[in-house]
Amino acid sequence: MQTLTEKPWFQHYPEEIPTSIDYEEQTLQYYLKRAAERYPDKKALHFMGKEMTYSEVYTEAMKLANQLRGLGVEQGDRVAIMLANTPQAVISYYGVLFSGAIVVQTNPLYVEREIEHQMNDSGAKVIICLDLVYPRVSKVQDKTSLEHVIVTGIKDYLPFPKNLIYPFIQKKNTGIKVDLTYNDHLHSFTDFIEKGSDADIPLKIDPKNDLALLQYTGGTTGPAKGVMLTHYNLTVNTQQCESWMYKLEPGKEVIMAALPFFHVYGMTTVMNLSIRLGYKMIIMPKFDPKGILKAIEKHRATLYPGAPTMYIGLLNHPDISKHDLSSIKACISGSAPLPVEVQSQFEDITKGKLVEGYGLTETSPVAIANLIWGKRKPGSIGLPWPDTEIMILSAETGEAAGPNEVGEICIRGPQVMKGYWHLPEATQASFRDDWFLSGDMGYMDEEGYFYIVDRKKDMIIAGGFNIYPREVEEVLYEHDAVQEVCVIGVPDPYRGETVKAFVVLKDGSKVTEDDLDEFARKQLASFKVPRLYEFRDELPKTMVGKILRRVLVDEEKAKQKQENDK
Image (cartoon, rainbow, N blue to C red; front, side, top):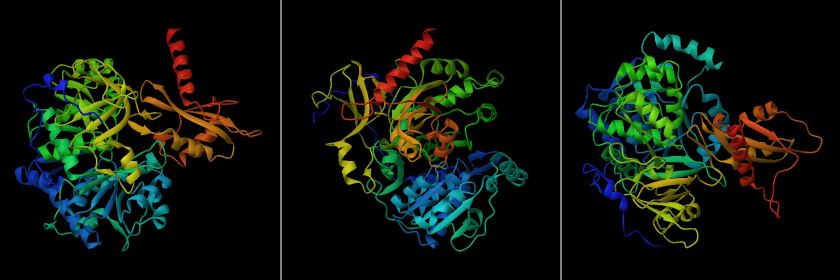
């Protein structure tokens, strides 16, 4: 494959951003220990009134690490974390790393089928989960490698009297009340940690080669794959982020932690960056526009990484004009395309900067971003980060494409994954030489700015979540009444895209949208469930019977254009 000889994007770098960085080769957990030494009494996080210092977070993480070792967890074992954004999520992440184990992040919205696959594929021995999701975990535990379950609740890290009141609120809002009887294999998170030692655990870790994380990502073919990210991959990406946000001050920034930590974007740009630089995190267990507006004003938050839906949610909130958001300095938006009008409105209100970035789970995740303080172009995803090379691969020639020629975005850099867990063939297929093939189509202009033309073939991005049509289709095909189904993404003003299913029923069968919705919700996380259904007598197909998904996508685009033109 042809290599790059020119990097036109460097001409736009401000002098403060280096083209190459002398990276610290450290483990992720080293930065929590360093922060506890540098800022022992500084507040590391705020959670619904509860605050913890860096020293306290470090001590709790070490206690958890020692307790995990006591359960038989050894270096290289996998420990799953299935938590919403809470202090426990931070403590668990670093505690697992301090024990020498590999973190397996698990979406708390996952249903039994998804949990079972991820636990078996990763071989996780232990899972740390919320009490609300424990019933799902318990149903599949016997079918997995899980030996121990450690359970915590939101109330466990709330101040008095919220810790007493919250269980009643939780039961009212969710209808779920979990009564647990702890034993040698089912543990209370708080009791488990309380009994632990905070002594150092000697480990020999090679940051460049040893894994810190298995982050599962959906595949267009087959089940979700475990992306292998090393300590170096993840620490490099935080250092690249630090260089891009050069005006920010270590130890002094306040960051809104609304992006989920179980997603690699929130993990890197919020949690790991904060711990590395001694920021204070304002942790939100879920996206709540009213709560976030209040928190930004109260805590004078300076950073707010998010997804477009989060900024849209704030802009559309009726109380936004009642809150002072002038403390915001910078926001990097990811996970989905950022509408230009959202960017301009948000900047007008906050007077801070909001720019779009681009990346994938396989790139830890950020590879490209617009300059926060520098030249940017409307519609562009920006410039490659330091030490990151981007090439557009021409489908016609198989070589590097020229300016403004559309092709596949290929990425080479120190943040690129080691490969897919136990999938050597899939790993090999995702690389050409040492270039990672993103599957996304785009182009570079004459000045070195990059643009996305189309996301991964067929993939739907709704509210920042990646949804793969095949997985949704396979679930709907299990319904007795369904003969054929095709799932696509259709434009949605809030989620960016939403899921629509085109369904052909078997002769004589009758089923409603509500029936299919109820069926799908038992098999899929809620964000993957179709919001729209259209019943048809037949679906467009090729001569050999392959369903033409693109025809349905084009029909929806034409229909929307017609409605917009009215």
